[in-house]
Image (cartoon, rainbow, N blue to C red; front, side, top):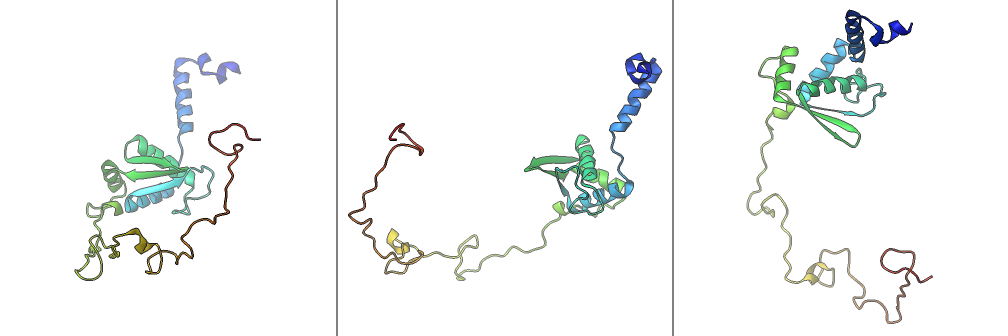
Length: 192
């Protein structure tokens, strides 16, 4: 039984067959329905993400597709340079490349007019402030200008603080903080 179980004891033609079988086992078999759904979503949005959770029952954006299928399909795309991958905070992020767009367009039989959402131009007009509406360039409201710091401190002059300060004299005269070395940060090694 040892002769049939280990490839070193098999003839050359059987060794090739053994390695071919092992290679097929490593491949993930993804149903065509799931493959098409993932490809359609990737083409429509231009981006795709997945949490690094191989045991998740479904992907958050595609409830019928297991998360593992999404990750494995995108790993295949990454190896063929059809997507670029980023990984942060236990999430994968994939962005479709131009070659990926061509491949998906051919696989899904889509016309050239349809493009991913990441390549579409924004249809919103840019809002420009009109002169005299109380806004500066960049859309931020005008702020009052002060020549001194007291204008925003909240004293008698109003200001922009959280209220007026009751007494600006400082700490009372009998206040005498005492600092001992010890358990905190910083210099010092004694004081117990």
